[in-house]
Image 1 (cartoon, one colour):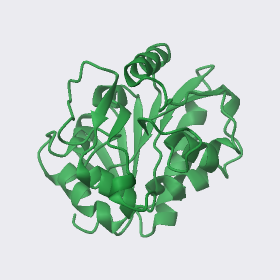
Image 2 (cartoon, rainbow, N blue to C red):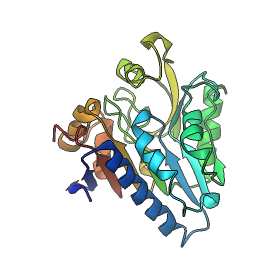
Image 3 (spheres, rainbow, N blue to C red):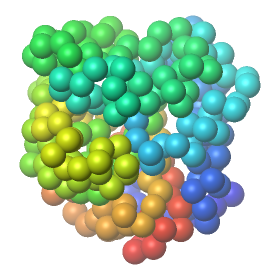
Image 4 (tube, rainbow, N blue to C red):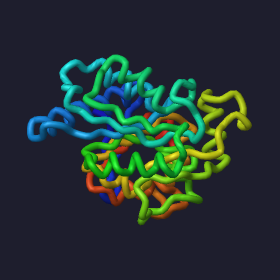
Length: 252
C-alpha cells in the first residue's frame, strides 16, 4: 500500500513508481466495480484517454473477474473533426488499450466528425439516461480535468457536454506526450464532458503520474479551489481518490 493522505474530501495515494500506481488504481477500481455489481444490474464508467493512463489501463485489462458485459462505458473527450480511426482519437485509444480485450456491454464513443453541437446534444442525452457510477480521469499540465482548461472551466456549468477551444498548454501537452509531431497538428477544438458531469459520478479515480504533472498536482491539492486549477474541485467531490507516483508528488 502506498502512502495515503487526505485534503478536504480528496484522498491522495502515493506510490514509488508508475507501475505500482497503475496497479493500485486498477485494483481499487476493479473492487469498486465488482462491489457495485452485487447491488446493480449494470453500472456506468467514464474513462480518460491519455498516455498517463497506460499503466492503469494495462493493469485493468489483465484483471479477469470483472463482468464487463454489465458495464456501460463513456469517455471524457474527443477532438473536433478527428476520425475515430485516427491514431490520436481518444475513442481509438480506449479500444486499443482496453476494449479490444475487455468487451463492455456498451461503449458510447464521442463522434468527432459529427456536427459538434449535435454531438454534444446526442452525448448529453446518453449521459442523462445513464447516471455515472465511476469516473476515471487524469489531470492536465495546466490542471485541467477532461478538456476543461482554466479559461473554459466552470464549476457550475449548465451544460453536460460542450465544445471548447483548447489552450496552448493543453495542445502542447499532446506534443509532449508524443501524440502529435508538432503543435500545428493538434486540433484547436474538442468536445468535452463538463466539470459537473464528472463530479456527478459517485466515485472518481484520478490517475496522475509523471514530473510534468507535479505543478498541477501541487496546485490542485495545496492551492485554492478555483478554476485557475480546475482539478482543485476534486477536493469537493463526494468520493475522489488521486493516485500519484514519486515524480508527480515531488512538489508536495
